Length: 158
Length: 208
Image (cartoon, rainbow over all chains, first blue to last red; front, side, top):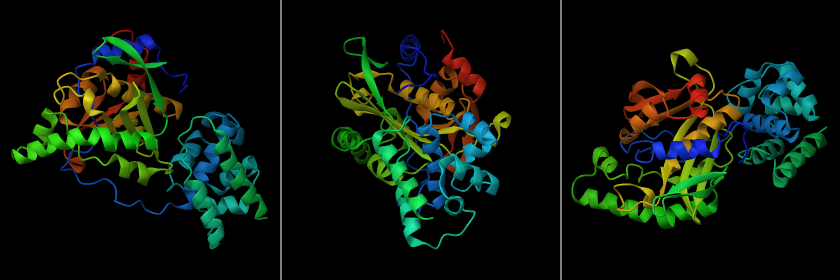
């Protein structure tokens, strides 16, 4: 996994030797209250909005900072959009993102929670897209196809 | 290139870090990690010693975590990132990160950070649980990955975690994180945070 922030192998070797006898396990003790429900809550459409922005940005090889500059929005707002389903983006930002992704602004408004969506088919497509994992640093062919397919669906809504 | 320390050969051995936990890793957990951990847990239960202190002493304080269910429930949720560390043909470590938690540190209050939710290693790597543990460095590689992910996400290296009792000195002294005290909402475990300055100092350090 590539990252410009990764230290070199000497750093890792030294750090590993220095911590070899330390315990490191992280997680809940068994008397702690469960932090999450046994079954996940239904995801809101804003998860699909965040993923659409993130994958579109990565597909164009832009950092959050670069996209924020390109759209003339705050870096913080883009980070909120990508990572917080509860966050509600400003309509102007949503409009700029729709232009950036080249998809209808009305649909992106629904995804972003700025407009109500009563279209069951639209909601299903969006949630299916949101269920796609976003763990990859660069888009794989499968992810590119998932993104393209969803963007095609949004464009066909016009 | 990442590597782990093979305690048997006393050599560093190349490792692969995958940016998601795959079915192969879940299978390794279910078939090879869980049985020895459950056996020790059962031994403690039958001896009437199944307490957090004893579980920590025997290095099985995480035996109740349900990695397969967590992998299944969290798949595709934007807020979660998972990692699997493989070496020697098997899964040696697992990691879950959360991207939506905010800092509690007074100097970083409400800023974005990466929260280290779960870190675990295969039982055959655990001192005290087995007489001759195999690989060392799993936790160091995985917690370092949380810092790198924080930098990659634009969170400037801010990381938060709750430490189980045996690991407190590692995060305080080796990772140089700030301890914000016991968290009553999380089993009174100590809560630690790393600031951007601490992350930069750690990753650029040439000696601890």
